[in-house]
Image (cartoon, rainbow, N blue to C red):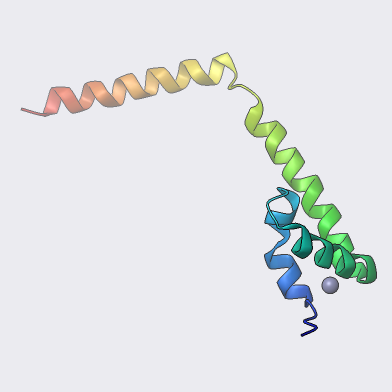
Length: 86
Ligand SMILES: [Zn+2]
């Protein structure tokens, strides 16, 4: 059985591929497809760039000014709740 992967199949598996979560045979089949398919190759490089940017942003700590405002806001909201609740 020679099953060819379509672009849609490859894109569905892309997140797992980038996370190295795919079995080796599936991975090599995807790479085969990417090697011969320019749109998928472009998509892959865009996806990789996007996820690496997201990870950097998520990893960065919250600035002090934001954290202080957030704490003040939360304290106010919790205070309101206590005041009104019986
Ligand atoms: Zn493709």
